[in-house]
Amino acid sequence: MNIAVVGTGYVGLVTGVTLSEIGHHVTCVDIDEEKVAKIKMGISPIYEPGLDELMQKNMDANRLDFTTNHQDAFKSADVIYIAVGTPEKEDGSADLSFVKNVAVQIAETVTNDVIVVTKSTVPVGTNDRLRDLLNKNLDNNVKIEVVSNPEFLREGSAIKDSFEGDRIVIGSDSEEAAATLEKINEPFGVPIYKTDIRSAEMIKYASNAFLATKISFINEIANICDRVGANVEDVAKGMGQDKRIGPQFLNAGIGYGGSCFPKDTKALIQIAGNVEYDFKLLKGVVDVNKQQQSLLLDKLNERVGSIEGKKIAVLGLAFKPNTDDMREAASIIVTEKLIEQGAEVVAYDRIAMENAKTILNSNVEYADRLEDAIGDSDAALILTEWDEIKKINLDIFKAMKYPLVIDGRNVFSLDQMKECGVEYHSVGRPA
Ligand code: UGA
Image 1 (cartoon, helix red, strand yellow):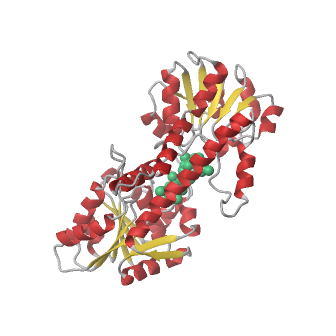
Image 2 (tube, helix red, strand yellow):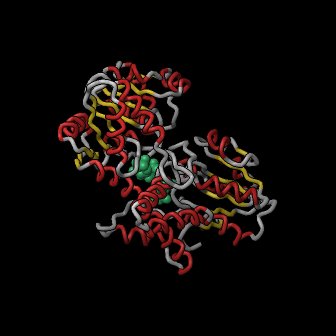
Image 3 (tube, protein in one colour):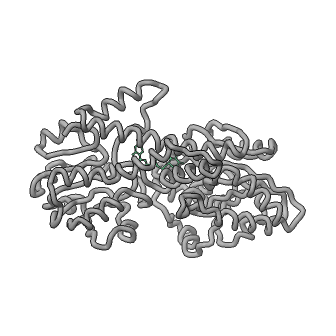
């Protein structure tokens, strides 16, 4: 199959690389010339374990190519994947202008029948409207089918997830197009679930909203545990043994971030609102998440009183480990509020630090090493559960003026911290 993928962001790039890995000939197209030039030199624009190697391997095998020229990419394509961004608009709805622009480009360019596959997360009904837009702008007498094929990969484990995912969802009103997509995806060895277009679109939002709900739910349970002296880790373990609940996504902490959950939950509230449905539960999930991001500051304030003039080490900046993605990371709010309250902030994240420098308050200082960030600080806050932090020699905390660690990701065991004499506060576990 000749496949074109539009957009070389996280979704597009991983899609293109993995489709080439299973044997398809893939051309990825992006308007960003600098980015495409770098990729062609083997430099991936994102930090994603395993991606660079796979990208280079398939470029060398001439199965994977990159261009800024959409005409070149679409010319001989049997299937075109749309994987451009759908950023959040001010009102929380998804901005579809990039998707629509690509649809018009496709309609004006293709000379053969083609299947257009939407990977980008788009509101329910978008693919139907996309089909109309494509047909309205067609320059040639060709047939275009539309398929919704939402993305379920997680940043940081996207390559692994591509080959070990739980399902691939194919939504189409054309049996023929659905069968083609099934054939394309078969080599991944992941179960395929076929449905209609609107249900496929909804599966994506409902899945992310449900996972976000699990997180906000366990975070509220953790906050109650804090007050009643229970341990949220044990509670989650006990709950998770019920197969109907399941053990995953019950890690309490400082809330969810990233480019997906915050955006998709708000978009689903909008989608519901557009059809006069008030999605009360999901609104609560979003509110709880916002509150949770400030939890460590509340704990810090409670413990030390005023933080003015105090030196605070912030360990981990990315929204989660194994990524350099800073989008909607709790570190943005936490560092902003620390600075606002007059603290001196020294931050460390081996991978996300360069991105962080362009996003965080300019008064944040950065340390080159984890131990330098901790140094003689008054308190250390843990925001991301990087392995490097999990494996730290706990004696390093003893160099602090007074060893006070406030952990937003429940990285260390309570016994471990007690033993080494560090005052340790975490989320939903007794201090
Ligand atoms: C999420 C979904 O997990 C993917 O299935 C989906 O494809 C993706 O969004 C998307 O829509 O593109 P991702 O944002 O990469 O993936 O990251 P997750 O691993 O799901 O974590 C999201 C956030 O939830 C992180 O901030 C993480 O720290 C937090 N989280 C996760 C918790 O606080 N507790 C948990 O138990 C799990």
